[in-house]
Length: 77
Image (cartoon, rainbow, N blue to C red; front, side, top):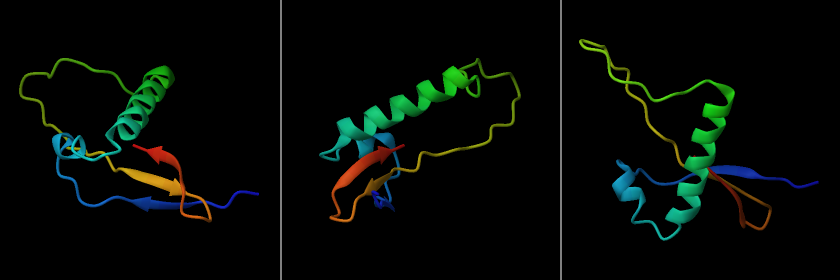
């Protein structure tokens, strides 16, 4: 049985700040996986912004799972 804990990384305000992290390729892969997952399930798609639309903001929460030895086992975007 594998026990894992979830941790969030520090406060990164923008994707540009996130790209400065040494492990950005792992985070980028996690984001691409999450977007592909939403597209395949039909829960997300990119559309033109309707005129006079009221936009609801959102953000990515970067977190990762570690095993009992604190080794990162999964990046989650």
